[in-house]
Length: 348
Image (cartoon, helix red, strand yellow):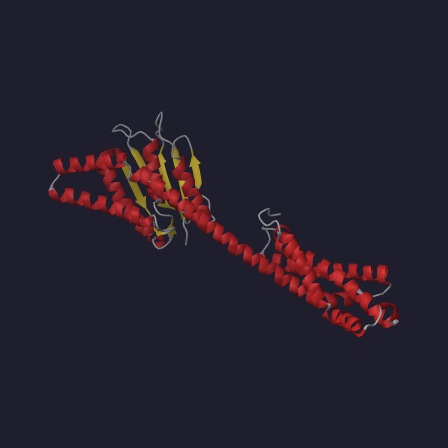
């Protein structure tokens, strides 16, 4: 069980005693009246004694019932319900299990009353008596589940914020690093010297678009695919000026996916990874293909591994964690002798 909640059993047990006391409020008031009137226990009639003894049996049984029902619904029901079964079947299965627990523990209460208090009470009567406690136990369990979900959501948001900060650091390291800026400015210098004014202005505009998107998107968990594609187009324009025809980008994304989302800079991060780990020469140009298939964005490249290269682990690991936290989905990586493929799930 969860070690982060060491006092939960004490809370459940205390609540069980409290609810059991409430269920026996009639008996408690009866005993208080007797004490107030100065009546001695030894002078009680057989009927009065039987009433108190039966109530004591109900009290013990109520505590056990409350505790078991809460533990089952809060801790164990998700382990008992199988993921490969339908939701309706699991709900029915949990409902039946709760009913079985109610009658099973009521039967135990009947045995306790008969053995210790010599009172023969049927299981059905015990179940009816325990119905109040049973309903409160279910409510209590699902309130605990709601609190746990809120707590988990807060933890996920905190982890997501942490991963976003790491993503910002990774993007700053990869994109706004002196190395990247140096290459971009070198490319700009070449464009200014070798191209006309319009081409130079276009390069500056694309460069501005790239940096503006980097700064803005780092504050978001998700971006529209159409915005990511516009950014990637501007980013690749800068790369194209640097590598020329040695680097080829082929994009074919269905317009139907434009309004769906992915984590910001996901495709660009993969393009950067391809460039980082593969040789790019006139004799061996590098081709990167980006297309969609079965609601996934596929980034594929021909494999031309460098003999040595910088590790991409931080960026890819960060992207995997972001996908897991944001959408509960996994990135798929296929590495063969001739190609490297990464599949990014689309988030709708």
